[in-house]
Image 1 (cartoon, each protein chain N blue to C red):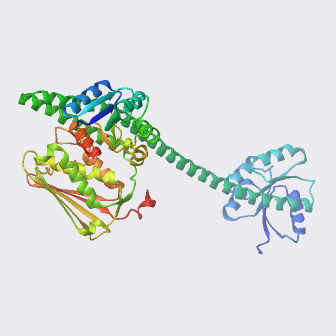
Image 2 (cartoon, each protein chain N blue to C red; image 1 turned 180 degrees about the vertical axis):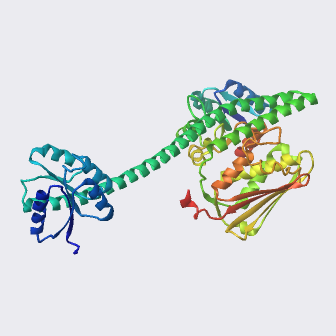
Length: 121
Length: 392
């Protein structure tokens, strides 16, 4: 059965391109452009793994993860962050918010697939 | 001549007045006044060149000088001797003016007695001592204030420098983040393009785009590190673990897979904990090993990493050896300069970043190279930072 990946990113172009990468990798993809809508979408689509951009205008990746894991009860869905800032690699903060791994931009698309497989176990 | 005796120089040209003053002084038993006399300013100055009276009684009306001129001359020559000025009845204003010109006291001739004279002399001597103390204190205060001002100026310069660095750091971080976003998009788009193309030439060109993206990222990293090089966050690290992580990272970089064989050999002693910043150490070794790969160019070569204890110091020596193209002896001294590079790509910041990191770790770095044969980089790291902590 195809695994479902949700991508949350405020950059529409990036979202589309990453969507194409993941579909070619054999995944079903759900894209979310506005993080505020992510929680509803998680409830509706029940993804197996979530990719989230760490720096978005309305919400940070940390906040999204924190909300999902600590308030909405989705702590069984692995979350991978995508970041342009080294500071986002703060391991203690990542642990607190339930982010398993942070990919540093610019990353190789193959690295995304490698890490998705890795966190899903 | 007893120490408690007071050497008194009476400067008076009128014999009658002189006799009066001398007799008054002779009456005093405690203290005893030893009196010398001068009748002109010229004589006075001569005496002052040879002797050191404790007090001067000065008549302002002298044959070779008048008014405050004699006072000024004497003060100029011997500023540490208290002077009591003797004025005529009509000259009280002059007396006050004299005090304003460094005289310690004034007395009106014809209106003095022994008691007043002695009191005035003793008062003037005490006052002079206090003036000396005050003057010395003021000098010391001035010196202290100057020192403190200099220190403050240095601190201020340091803070301005730190602020400038912080501003650059903040700017660099912002720019880096901004740049990384479009770079990430380019990378993903290239990947998608490559998948849809069969033409090998086109595929090759897209591969070039991907490489340039990664190169740009490395430039950003170097720039960030250079502008934001912070004091290391010292932790207990295992050098062997760091080196294996570095090798893993390098091997994972697909452009390196085909090229060279990379091996690491660590002396078992390397398992002891070293106080170092793991992020900075990784950056250091990644930079050095990447340089080795660049030197290997198209040849299939070997990179050897050897870590062993430094027998002379309590630390380790890490050798990174390649059999690549080597460095020209004329370039060997320049390689540490920021932005110096013989390569067509890269910023040329790599080695200066390495050197900064080594300096921050109180370590050493040395490069031995022979053109055409290869290069060996030797990194020395102390085991403990504790001895260096206070010096920063």
